[in-house]
Figure 1 (cartoon, rainbow, N blue to C red):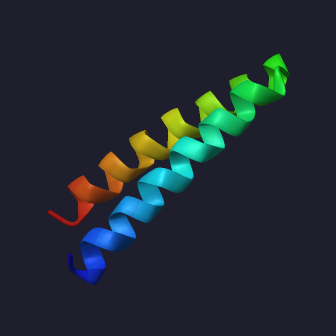
Figure 2: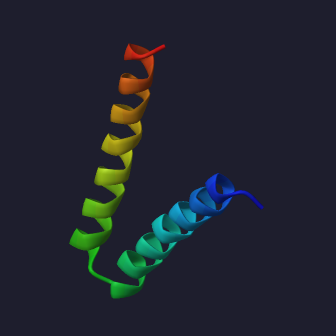
Length: 53
């Protein structure tokens, strides 16, 4: 397994663990904030990707 694949796996695992942490807290504000930030982050990533295509 290459370093890039390992790093990608670790980043995905960290995102998943962050989601699980927010959900397990049971705090609806924390869950909503997490979901909102993930949505905005995905949109920003797509926008930046289009700029550098």
